Length: 472
Image (cartoon, rainbow, N blue to C red; front, side):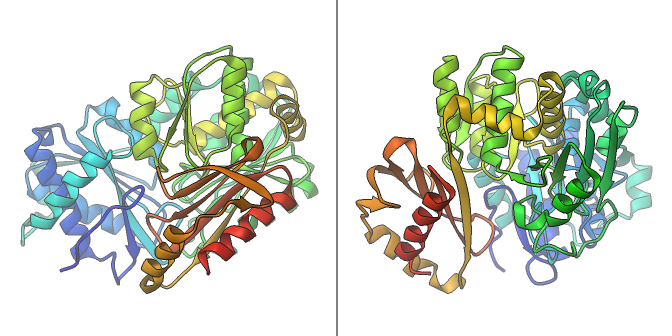
C-alpha cells in the first residue's frame, strides 16, 4: 500500500485513483491515533468539507472512522471555508479539525487538511508524526452507523459559520465599509465562500453582488479554482460593464484572495499583501513583525524598514509561517499564493478576512484600488512580480533537480546574481533588491518559477532565463 505524504498543506490526490475512501479511512484513522497518543482525542475533532465532488461523503466517512475509535466529532452541516472551520477549533476547545478540500487544485482532485488545536496548518513536526501514525494505523473494519454514533453522542452537527461571522467584525472595521458607497463584485469561483460577503455587507450604502456562487465541482471556465489573473476574466469584464469599485475573488476553500481594480485589472498578490501591511502600519498605526515566505515581495522589506518593524522570512506554506506568526506575535503573515493572516486571528490563511480588510482600506482612505497601488509605488518604488508554472512528467523530477543543482548562474535577467539560498527551493538575489526562485510544488507535478523585477518586461526576462536553466 502506497505511503500517504502531506504536501505544503495537507494530502491531495486525484479522486478514485489516489483519493479513495480506503486511503481517506487510513488518514482519518492515523490522525485519530495521533490525537489519542498525544492525549487530545477526548476534546473532539471538527470535520468539515468544501464544494468538490462527494466532499460531504468523504467527510461523513472520516467522521465515522473517528467515532468508531470513540473520538467525539463535530460534523459541519454544510460546506464551509477552511478558515471558517479552523476558527471553530479554539471556540469549541477541540483537538483539531479534518477538512476535506483540495483548495485550488483542479476539479478531479480532492484532499484532506489537518488543523491542530491552534487552528493553523500543522507544523512539520506534527505532519511527520501524523504520517507515521497513518503508516501503522488500523481502522475498524466495521464502522459505526450514523445512527449508532449519534445515539452515543459521538457525532453532533454544527453550523461553522455562526462563530466566525460573530468574530469577523471584531477583526476588521466593517462599519466603514457599510457606510461607504463602494460597489463590490465578489467571484466565489464555485467554492465555499458563497454568501459570506453578502451576509456581512448586505446592508451597506453601496452595493454588493456575487457571481459563480452555485456549487459546480468541475469549476467550469477555469483550469482550477485559484484567484489568479487567467481565471478571473469574467470578473474583470463584469467590473468594467457594471462600473464596480472593486472585484474580490476567493479560491475553492476561501483561504486565498484575489483583487481586481476598478478598471478590470488584476492586482498581484504581492501588491495586495503589501497594501494590507500598509493598512496595518499606516492607517491603523499598529506595529509588529511582518512574516513573509521566500516567494513574497521585497516591498514588504522596504515597508518594514520605513516603519521600523522586523521582517521574518520562512519557507513556503503556513506550516512554516504560522508558527513564526504565533511565536513572534506577528502583525501580519503572507505568502505569494494570496494567503494572509493578521494579528488577532488564527495562524491560518483567510481570504474572507483579507478581503474585508482590503475593502476597509478603500473605505478609510477613500482611494480606489488603482490609487492605492499608485500610493504603494510612491512609497516602495516599482516592483513587478510574476510566476510561471511548468508541468512536467513526475519521472523527470530527478533530472530537473540535477540540472538546477549543477547551475551556477552569474547573471539572470541582465542583473548580477549577488547571493543564493536554498531555504525552500533555489533563490537568487539580484541587484536593487530584486530576486527570483525555482521551487517544486508540494502537491502537484509542477515546477514553479517566481521573479520580481523592475518592469513587466524585466520580470519576463528573468523568468525566461530561469526556464532555460531548468530545461523544461
